Length: 113
Length: 117
Image (tube, helix red, strand yellow):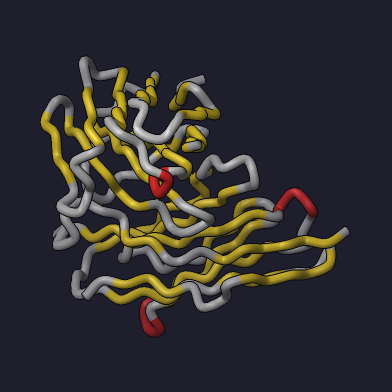
């Protein structure tokens, strides 16, 4: 089945220790998104790519970076995690921008000690 | 401005009861899409439905049904004969064709649905 895969499902890191979360997709979609979600709040968009064109949301902290080396993979790097970065991180894909449906992966739950 | 309101923060019903989750939206666009997602305790956001602004027909999928009314800017979701597995947070979201929102989905705050056995 075509799907969005995220690894790891659970990640524990220490305060200030860099961490990388990964996402892959077999849907062959052009757009990939990274969301942060805290405590059953609505997801908050951090970044999105159309193919390799990168778009950073204005209020995404500089501490967060992203890479998309090819169509299938996307990475979220948190350079110096703080306690406030503990959250669920969701990857999503869509065929195109705008009104196309976004399909989500299972998420990575990040704990910062 | 674009906005999605899910006024019900939490709903609790007993299994087999019918339950309706409300969604009210605001948009300036004439072309837009509305979505519902389910987020069970595992955390994955599961796509349920996408509906465009020109299609006001109600949709039924098994025990799930959706009522779209442009006149009241509402896109309500009903679960018939609820089951414990329906327990989740449900999000309503809006996507605009003109994309004043810079390609973002506009999310409601979510409604936590608890189905008691």
